[in-house]
Length: 448
Ligand code: NDP
Image (cartoon, rainbow, N blue to C red):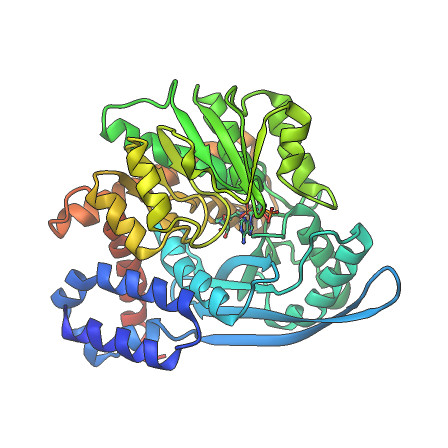
């Protein structure tokens, strides 16, 4: 391995020993970009890698809120402003009990390269809280969002840091947070958050963007392979925003999503999640107070497999859309055994580094998260552009731009891989293409 890359990985491990997910992504990205580092010895003198693995700023704060019974609760809130070299920090807010600084650093680090890949001027950031929205009333969610934004508002703004949604944060939560920001700042800065409702500055196609983008990217891969989505079966995990958008576009393109999952198991629907009723029910489930994937099985008479993951179902294409590290070696083996040729990451870092390597070695084409799910943040950046113009584009305009962006992401990744003699390796290609632009910007801006 390149000595500089090796040294920075080792130092990062020592400095961040308590953050395994962050170390996992740093190792994955830095080993992928090794040929670029070898080609540019000037990066070492400028300590480029040491700088890129260190967030520009991390903010940690207390969030105090009251439940419906009047009892006070304290959660921890965070914002990681990782890299602003190519634009304002941009990345979602996650509300989930598993959230800690290491998880947000992993997500923020990934976001730097993902945002760069979109071709749009956005830096990398991520935020969230260990608050668990499951089982909370609407009023409790509102009070929590208001308390969270009361602190966060002093650190964000349309040209500094622009958060969006992620796990546990959808349109409703963005609305409550935007309301609180507006109340405190007394300014209609609607470009401060993305994923807003249409009536107050949101963009058409933003809710669908991540899932649609996954399929637009997949279409490019299918075209490269002389293949077609029509008639293919897809195993999805998750049943949230990304899974919904993906299932919807799969149905539109003539494919069939046959599984969805949650923390407690998965549902197998052999007829496919293809009707409007089923697709809309995903939204209903996700918005309900006691959201649980089993509700789908009960409503549509399908089987629910408690405590199991959907990878045991044979499908042509696998698209994880839930959370990190749900695909280990066991699941990767199941995907290979199913004879699947394609694996696209809707969720962020859904597989271990070992599992991704194994899938690639077995000939499965891997579309990596930072490329495949970049459609969400891309349309978020288009939402910022519309807000800045005080104007709104039609759904067709946004959709056409999203398609073009996903094609560019695929083509740039493939070209970067080819340039470094890596064949059609979309994982390394995405890392190289995403990294190069940020590296150029950091080198141009001097030490910071
Ligand atoms: P949602 O909150 O809408 O849905 C999350 C889904 O993941 C639910 O089905 C949830 O099931 C499941 N899930 C969450 N945690 C776990 C867990 N620990 N184990 C098993 N299942 C779990 O989130 P999104 O759809 O927005 O996000 C899904 C993934 O996509 C995340 O990795 C996110 O970072 C990524 N992503 C999202 C984007 C977006 O625009 N929303 C953009 C790019 C990436 P349950 O409720 O049962 O826990």
